[in-house]
Amino acid sequence: MATMIRATSVCRLRPGWRLQWEEAQQRHVLLYPEGMVQLNDTAGAILGELDGQRDVEAVIQRLEARYPQAPAGAIALDVQAFLVEASQQGWIQHD
Image (cartoon, rainbow, N blue to C red; front, side, top):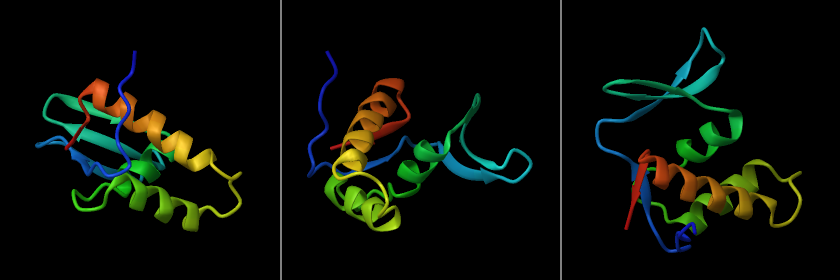
């Protein structure tokens, strides 16, 4: 069963990993010492908000402001599900 990440948790990329816009592919990628992960638009938007200072609630608020056309509550659900998956994949760390 997936563990929830609290709204007050602060998430950051794993040390040595970097988010980058890849012009040739027209998408964000996650670079790590052994390779690269191609990200969809949603993953790129969420990871782009992880600065190691904002908590999950602040990330959700920023994305809701950026995408006001999203159905109510949809962004919070997407962010929570993605962060759990990213944590399980070892892409991010959180307190």
